[in-house]
Each structure stands twice: as C-alpha cells, then as structure tokens.
Figure 1 (cartoon, rainbow, N blue to C red):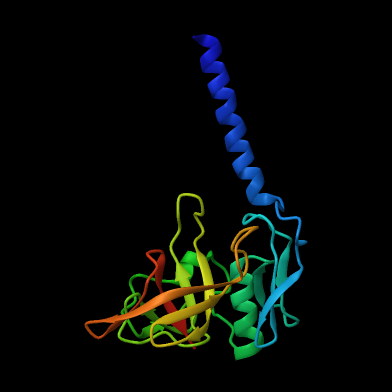
Figure 2: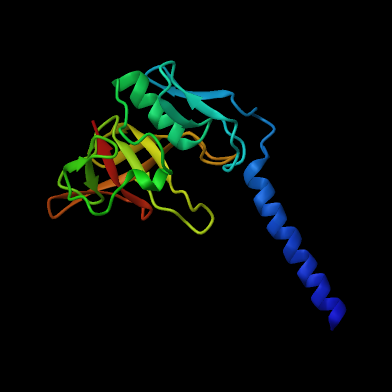
Length: 194
C-alpha cells in the first residue's frame, strides 16, 4: 500500500512539474520565440512559446511600458501605441485587470483612458476594440486580444500568446438579443475602445 501511494505521489509530482515547465518552454518546433507570425495594420504579432514564457520587458523609445515581451498585453499595448497613438495612464497590470467590473457600460475606464463596454452591451464591437477575457484555473492572468474584423454575426480577433499550438486569429459568434450585442465566449468580460 505504501509503495502504491509513493508511486501515485511521484506521478502527481511529475505531472505538476511537467505542467509548469510546459508553460515556460517552447513545445512547438515549427516556430521560434520572437518569430513574427501575423500582423494587424503593420503591427507584428510574435510567437511566445509557452504561455508563461517571458523574454524581458518591452519599452517604447520614449520609455513607455509596453509590457512583458511576447505576452498578450505587450501586443495590444504596442498596437494601441503604434497604430492608435494611445498611451494608457496605468501602463501596468495583467490582461484581466484591463476590465473594471465597477464601470458602467459605455463609460470611461480611467486606468486605460478608453471607453469600456460589458459583454453583452448596447454597443456593437468595432475593429480595434480590445477584448478582455477572465482568468481561468490554468491562467490566473486572463487574456486580451484586438478585434480585427466584425460582421453582422461574427467577430474575428487577433492575439499574441494563445499557447504554443494556438492560432493568432479566432472567430466568435456575435448575437444581438434584446438590443444588446454579445460575443459568444463565456470568458469575454467586455471590450475597450479609443
């Protein structure tokens, strides 16, 4: 009985160590960390390997904090800085922290100096909106992406760091119920707009 317990305990330890190691290392031999894999309006999306990998901090030429290299936050802040000439008053924080649940739909999120919309909202998502995702058991930091295309019934997003085998672009159903627009993804808290 004791040997069986030790064997199971050993297997559990290996699984936990393997899980955390897989978040830090590159499991996909098709890409190298830092390799350009996509772009939106000329702003590059880079491959990050494991979702927990960090390759230093990215700063703009004027010293503005863009975030940890190749994380999702770094891409959206770099996009807003380069393409939309926008600096966030609070240049730090995890992806989930971009959304403040205390702010009413359509009001200004002062930390980001952007209008915030809840999912669902009276305002339909637009191209260049930031989409904020909640944390999960396996990702306590949440996620953030950018709307790259909107139709009557679909939203396409572009993202950095979706995982070693994830895609830089995803599509979600967009529905209008009772005068409110909802992106069909239970993790999406809402979107921010300049």
